[in-house]
Image 1 (cartoon, rainbow, N blue to C red):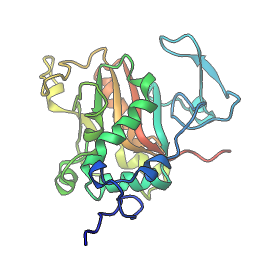
Image 2 (image 1 turned 180 degrees about the vertical axis):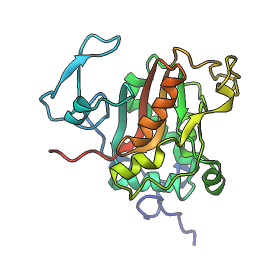
Image 3 (image 1 turned 90 degrees about the vertical axis):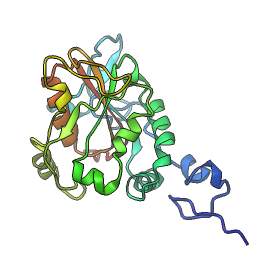
Length: 251
């Protein structure tokens, strides 16, 4: 008797084990963000726009949520596939904590679909780095795996210069304090002559449009901390693309 392996998300036996560790019904049940969404943070919006502003290089209006109108993020735009809940959350956990690395490719495909406008015209994908101790324990950086599947040169321009607590479970203020000063420019990008370290990676950051890549966005603390370092290094525009986002509750 042959027992089929279980789906990494729902635990049911897989009908097609060779197709990957997650069953088709789980992929199909993922709830995705649908327009309109806030251009700046990616949160879903009601049909009526809160505010409008001209998109850089675009002709149409851009909608922003009240929070981003009050305090504009450092990143120019952000998108996510869907909310951090249900099967999407289960799949991310399987990828990140159960080390199901093969899930990087289908998750990146969902990100490409959700972030087509952000990827258009971008020069590189920059993964949010892990501290080397956490990366050694986990065995890989999930953001780097996702970035590799977006069709852009992957530029490891950031380093996590000090260990931080896991953001999960921290309040918004604690999250920002946790990552303050935690990121810096990778050594290869510090001097006037910047070294390439990947075959297709850009040699310089000056004037570049980059897409910052991570698995989950919550309060935007990590996003802003990384964007600040990149903008200070001469990046022209930072966009953010994640698999999931913890959307703010309607107020």
